[in-house]
Amino acid sequence: MKAVFISYNQALTDRVNKILDDQGIRGFTRWALTEGRGSVDGEPHYGTHAWPSMNTSILAIVEDQKVDPLLEALRKMDAATKMQGSRAFVWDICQAM
Image (cartoon, rainbow, N blue to C red; front, side, top):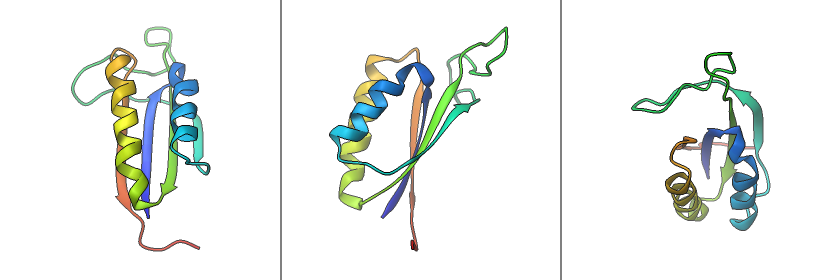
């Protein structure tokens, strides 16, 4: 099992939901409003007057074989929406109940 953390501009929520559905990933936890800025470029998403955009973040625990197709779908979305900004990170899950 892997934990996949996805952070993206909240404007992309419908696209991310569709990717999760298409990949057969049902369970996740979503934080509707998260702040951040890219490590290389892009505008900050702080929800302020100067930087009004906000992010949304998801944590999904998925089977190992679903990780690569999920990341590929997210890469395609990011390439098509480069100015919106999205990132995904994967961690190993040692135990679950």
